[in-house]
Image (cartoon, rainbow, N blue to C red; front, top):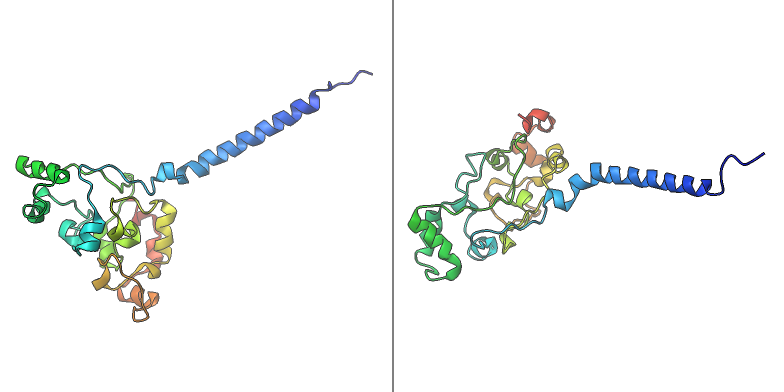
Length: 217
């Protein structure tokens, strides 16, 4: 009786199985890997700007308070981007002939604000309010990383839903006293209130923070 399968049947079967396994792995990567990849989250991305603004120089070296430029961070959903007039309060007297600041001077004279490129951007279906986070003791560096040491601003976090939920489920370790929220170099000490004490002081109800409508409205 002649053989039903030829001598190459095992080879073709193995190749087919390997191709199927490879396709499955590729599908899993596309579903789970790509959304979490740096290419998609743009974590560590340093977008080009019209002026190479240095937080390290302005915040770390000169000690300028975050609220001087981001003036609406305590009262608005948006932290605010400074108008050119804010820059010129200093730079009308300092580095007045600097080539790197030429776009700032031109912007001021033309009454057109600089068009900064966003470093952090959320999808339209995600609601985020800076003011409530500040009111509840969340410091700038919790989301923006070591911003006071950045020569150029980069995205420090991936902004994934999981990243947000990790904080909302256990906010205590991410809180600090009100007078330290804008200290880019603050570190917890033995005198710092505990995580539980801060949660109680800010009247945070963790059970409410993971409700879908908190971020999706």
